[in-house]
Image (cartoon, rainbow, N blue to C red; front, side):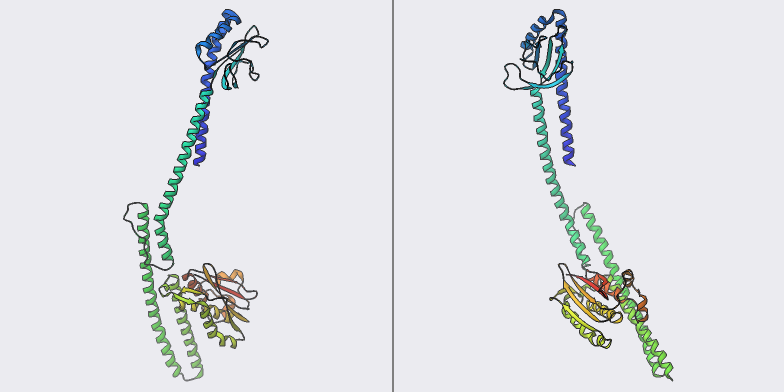
Length: 430
């Protein structure tokens, strides 16, 4: 935009300047022509020739005059020959020719007139010096604009670096908070500008978020405590009732009630884990975790259960991968994926870990029926259960917990097709 504006400005000034130069020269040539026509009316061509010679001596070097007869023969003036490009129609034109006793051609504004006896008169003014001066002015303007653009560019770079430096503290704080450091705040410089106001506003927002997260932690811990106590008492009561049951039917009913209580307690625990993970709680326990060893532990734990169901579990970790993570929550997420594969999959359950440039990927694949593409989003929702899952125990929170744990670790959970079966991939930021 600046270059376009500079070009328009220079072009406009150029046209105005050149137009003014040619207009002034044309007016001077017109006055000389009218004066010579008046002389012709009084004394004919001879008088015009004498007046041309006098004007050249009196008016200086800028005047251009030429008088030729009807055959084009020179009669008077400071131009030797009639310019072939000049039409005798009374209109002004700019030409470049040599004058007598001049070594260089010059640009001039001239008007040609045919006299009644057939002779021709050329009157004009040299505008070479004015055009050169205008050209010098244009070059000076272009140079000044180029210098101005350079300084404007430098000023823009300096301003951008200043803004980047001022905003860099805010960006660094936002990244730290996103990584789980809720105590991080934007350093204040003590100024009174928009950047300082932005920093103060962000710090106030972070204070509010930290307070809300703290309240959430207290609320969830209290809720877990308050609900676990009556559920535990309910189980103890059911155990006593089971011992005092008079018949087998009563014992079966009590056992079912105990199973539902255990299921409710598990649902409560999982829901609280999801809420805490989504709120970012648990990052304080991050430590170095070797994913391959963790997958091997999970496979060893579920190996006998898989054999009982006619399935197998294998681990394929290409290289040692160490990440900064909450080992308990990460292991729980992998356990949920393996448990899901045991419930709804078939064949071999393959656990893999791959390290990328910025993230590590933990994948659990099975050879079962998988999940249709249109139903995968519903499967990740809380209490989202597909038709095939309704025949198996569960609350529809397993995959939701895995997604929350992945989000806590800066990653995500995606469900894909293993051809056949389900491929669940959980990414973790490195």
